[in-house]
Image (cartoon, rainbow, N blue to C red; front, side, top):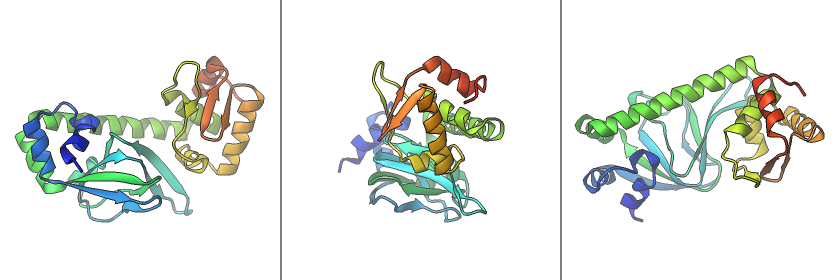
Length: 224
């Protein structure tokens, strides 16, 4: 397996030169995970930065009521646990949603690289800022928006090919966890959206029927 090629496929390292990529390769370990297998668990010692090169990983915490709260779905080409590199332990759990290939960049070696490479340091700062913004937006949605508005916001954040349905890579159960609701409530919301001809969600595909109404629902200007 060509680690240099896999590292270049990550957005975080796509513009690094051969010397920089080779330095990363020296501290990289590649592992395969089965669906449902943990990449790491909340509270376990932080080992470094992780990169998904194939498959999908979800990041979540379990609440006092035993329910999962999914913070992020990580797809191929994306890094995760960047903030945990500066912590002693992981603040959440990472679990493979599908069979996944994940690269680990060892914490101490990566910190040394950051100290020698300002360009890479700024890129890491940028990803941390993006992560904080996503967490802020997710908290705002959970606090101020009702379930239909949260789901509408999620759908509008997905890349939508013109005239084609949106393929969803996670299960409806996981999606319900992401927007902070139960599978039963989520099913009722989907039924109302279909009844009002706003969108349909069949199998793993979402088809937007009325984007303007979906945008109104996302803003909270329209209730269903």
